[in-house]
Image (cartoon, rainbow, N blue to C red; front, side, top):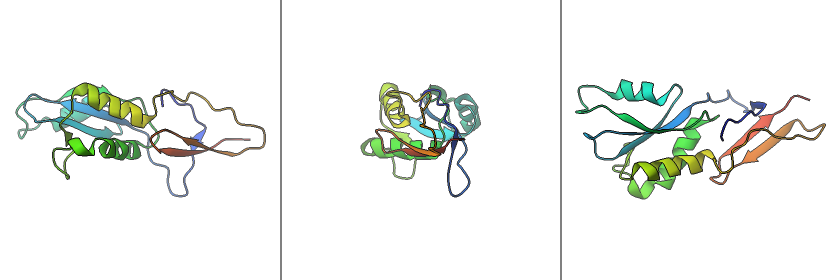
Length: 141
């Protein structure tokens, strides 16, 4: 969703916080780490640079803000399941380009949603993306 300007996300429970899905690489780690953050990918990469990692992580890709980054991350993990290093880890044996393409496809980047024309009297719209990510938005009358 490239620069989405949706009214606001509607959910029966609290709406999930917007965030970004990222891909990180490190010459000292086998695979590309894919995850999400409510901040920025470079901040997450810095937070992961501990004594247990031989070389620092570098940002390969960072999505624009998405309304539910956890759902996008789950869709990326499903899409790349065959390349996952271990079932309980966020590392994948893919190239940076493959990681980027998977994230962009799951974000719904083709094409991005910048605005939605809502007919008068309609208060709720469902936006569906090719990856089955569904967002329900409520729009002021």
